[in-house]
Length: 501
Image (cartoon, rainbow, N blue to C red; front, side):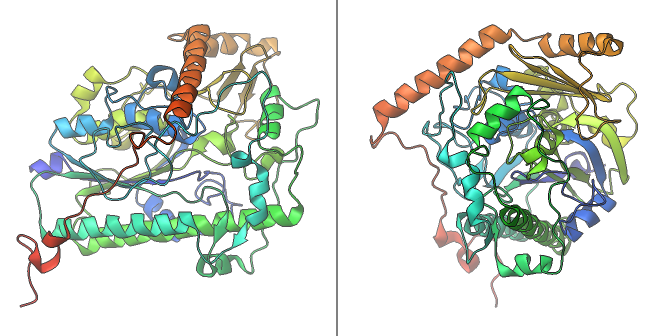
């Protein structure tokens, strides 16, 4: 067996805010057009129950890269620094001889903009400083950056920052693969291609928007919760997102959903281009392709938008692992989380032992699930949220058929998500499920002191706000990444590249 058989290339593709329930892979009534993802899933391993570990960008990605939950890695929100001494999947792969390259969004906050990547092919799309830090207050309030007023621009556009960014991400990723075929190296690569769509604002160009011209875009299937049904967190998020003041009209909802689907179709086209390029460059057989998202989007279900909630539309993500040479095509109901990707990707590259030694106990490699049935799999996912839009920290555990949600100082929730996939029947007060509640509560708090953790989160937010205000305007307060390219070594001027002669 060759070294490459033991250490395949890894192409890790990630979308931003792509919910699984809008994809026909998971929902026969879903309307998003995704021929390339469908083809990838047909020959790959499709996970029906993959969850993010925190339904907001920076914390979710930090959990994914480190395998550690927010209470451990201390990335509390989108303005939280990602500490350089947290081992990542890139560090693990690097120790096994991999080159780690990223094209696109990582949303790292702080001076370290690599965290084990050898090279970034693009800058990031969002600020890397503490400017997006939001303090917890006694009462939540609407914020312009997260308000549903942004839905008013949903629809067609000539272009926007997201489209411009993703086109650069795709160009640089394809460029890397092409250079890889011209200058083959002995050491394998992990290429992370991370797009910003279909994150709001929901806008698209005619090429993708027009594909839905004759599609009867459906309104959300779940109505808004009544006041009696509404959980405290739902009330808080409706204020934070401005839904109470600016409820979107039917026309706005349809335009937003249509544009969201169009953005997904653009990402699907990019996936197809990357897969075709692997085949064209003879890299396909020796490359594991992974596709996922950082979290979902409520898309108007239950009257809610965006993320930040533990309902499945917000926390369940697509997950495809593809390499027919290694893994037989199948669908699995096994429950995994993005945090589990860290030790799994390390395991794929021959760094499973070091990931187990240096990584977090909160995650586990699911490589055995790819290779066949794994009777000992934990079949659970833990989620935490200490970010903006809520007044209390809250936690979630999905294990087997049940999801348990705990909000400090408020009644917990328990759903049987197999029998009740829309999560409307709270079983918490039903004594029949008392033992299940007890078990899930113990899992949730096995390694967590919630009061001490919350105190750390609050102090971190306050400290970062102080630092940001004191450094704002300083020339030294600048962490945004500048990609480095030496144009003198490109094309026929580069080493070992064939000329046209």
